[in-house]
Length: 197
Image: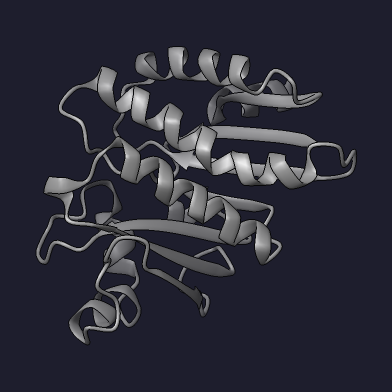
């Protein structure tokens, strides 16, 4: 198995991949933050689903759509997180494990995701980012770890998150996934420089 985790400042709408995952809170009128541009670009999809009451973002709610060419990914997977005020670490790990299992089940091997900021400090958000990545990958490891030709590539859109805070996350994830024989974890610009060098 090859596992590749990239942390990128490139917005999700610009990714060319099989799917984009949008974990979304149920709070009406909650600012979309780092996903505002994606939300605006998805007029006819995301905003209209909310207005029609078809997508509420309740805990664990899952909705899979074809992107219809609105973004670079083929599919869009919405995952409900419930109310932001009561969302906690256990909810985060549960939802990410569900996302991993869903994507594995439908054969998605390359996708982008943004982990929403639910912590008050950069350190706490770094911990959440690490936990989310570990639980997201776990269903794939469970089913494909011994498959030499299996490749999983996940791009985490980190928005305005400080790059300096990513370093310890990357190091801890490398340790957590050290049993994976073919592993690469890093910031996207580092990967791009290595690829061109």
